[in-house]
Length: 235
Image 1 (cartoon, rainbow, N blue to C red):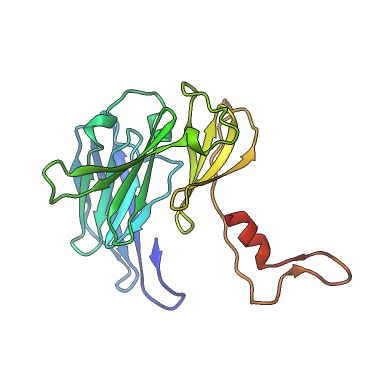
Image 2: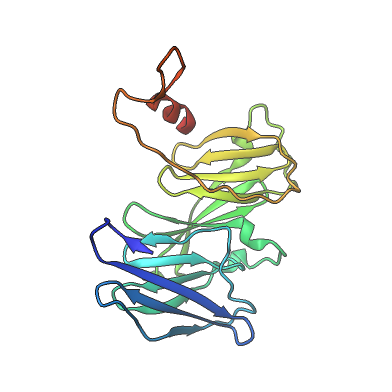
């Protein structure tokens, strides 16, 4: 749902899939007119165009994007009210029963689409450039083993994406060494826990805001949880 303030009109997009026929379709609700639009569908060559339930939608410009379970991207144009499919890079067409845990959609500073792909001990950053001949262009490869101190990262270990913070640009990973959050802009890594990677979990980030100089607690001799706590979290 898109809503900019409590008193403004909003739009609600409901997305469905038809795994038997390989189609995805959606409906758009406009609060201004209190009506639902016609069904909008797109045919897919995917066996199962199911949306990844662990990856929330991301608004990129006028496009609302969803990650599909096979790593492709479903996007809805809010202005044109059209639905389309972006296939993942050919280089990423590997088969894995949990392949959606190796992908993450991001947006660039100029409202472009980025696809993060986890391949072994590396993170590949691909940018969608429809005007380019190959459409997907690999911007860089991050060697995760270089971020670990000491370097105990096992190259053949499993690495899964567990969540993503859209505002701070953190990606949450499970590796053979435990659970980590990686800040992709500053190339910083922080251990979260040593939970067994075989356990299934998803990280949904939560942010709160406080007036400058105020915090939670701090009264009656209690410790103050101020903005510094948020700075520690993001460092």
